[in-house]
Length: 357
Image (cartoon, rainbow, N blue to C red; front, side, top):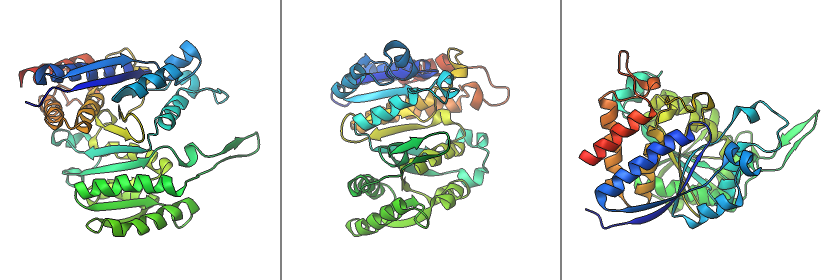
């Protein structure tokens, strides 16, 4: 048994299905703490539409302070159709997400893409293409078009895909280092045949190659990469790309696993690390006990592994795999004729398995 660890975790459930899946994520962490003798302390804070309604700010100063004081942030999801359908809205839930990434210096989004043998049938892709796929996409998170200068009037609009050398170097360092720990293969995804920002990325990556001689580095245009992650997912080991390309590419990879409800992620950087499911807030399902909690639960596993609690992370992953094998699944991934399980039921099954295992 590992020695006792104490972790202070900021819990930002957010909007839509966020609170429901977060409840299960925290329940799983509590089961792990009980089994291994750890102490996890939680402090809840508001963000997204919930925070706009309460205080007019999607990432209030109090929430920022809670995150800064914590060892880690466990995040749910933000988003609300009231804002999606109003192009004139000056403040949006997603602004809180961008502000959080910027203020916490979370420049590296790490998204593992793995298949589950029991869910291969659920992917729209052929089983022989995806079986055994296991790669990580690293997305730059605080630069590029999402943060560059913007302008809009009735006749024209622009966004600026702005990157500096230090921003590119630090994200590439994360990617090269991870490739060294994995299968020594890094793919840099860009659009260097058209975009100046991509040419800077490629130039810096080529300069850095010599520092990582045991990593095989290749370069791929985003349009080709968008096709290859679906037609040859087993080609990839570590993929690194800029913010906009990474946003699209990581959502695309969800069809490899069969559901966005299965994909966790980590965002790392200068301050408190953050762990969150890849899926959005799915407001239509809020409060209906339909949402798959597995991505949130696996995000909790990534949180523990980040702090060196490998055995604890493995216990969570084993419990998730057992739940899938036992067809304890929410409706979007349930087999034909399988029993009906909701968010709470799946979470409770996984918690009970951890306590028994």
